[in-house]
Length: 282
Image (cartoon, rainbow, N blue to C red; front, side):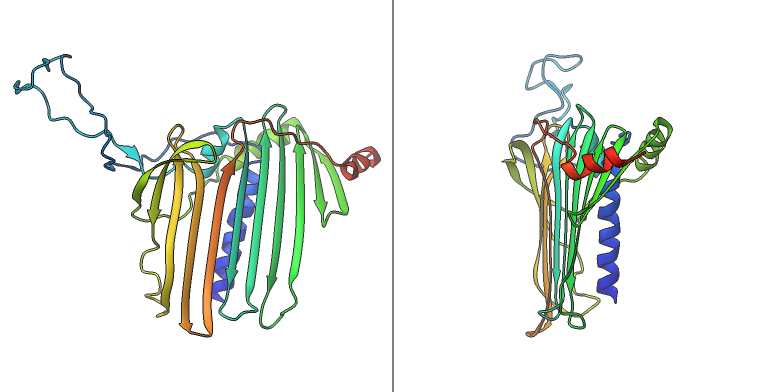
């Protein structure tokens, strides 16, 4: 029951993300999660020959140089996305165990283009269990172009609608109130890398106190994420957790979030089924 509750909460949060990024919310200030992380290439906060600090190594007036701090946590998800002109943001989660038949998979891919304002989101769910071994799946696609939107269920059911300027403004205001960060704890800097064509800082972490409450053996506990050097938004996030209570009962969670096609041309258009539903709307 606890496992299913956690999965349900995860899906609700991710579903909220899909709604939020239809209309980028107003960015909110970062909470200042800034940790001085030594890299060996730090820049100094002070330079000689300026103000009261003469260009002289023996002058006592010079303050001791300190490494420039940079954030080890990204800005909130929607705050980071709203700073971009276009992108593809994908989230994928697979949870399995404790039996071979217990499995839940969730995938959410959102494509965003600001000129013209358009969003495409595809949400996929599938699950099975020891009690219900036959997999149950669903697929929903949402197109939003300007004030028009179309929802496609299972690729065959098309529903077209429009919104007023007041409804669109209210939706934007409400979604700007909801934002979140993915889990990380006491991250360690791995180094600077190029991820998905973006200069990024790579951090690694593990989930604290994993298995303490359940008494399960922790096999894998590793998280990695990459933050854009310019903009401090999340580029990629990976978390893999595996625990077992016996050789036959193993639980595993794989969670990935990835940002690609940043500020590149993205084309979003209604499929024919949406155009037919549009034409049939009074």
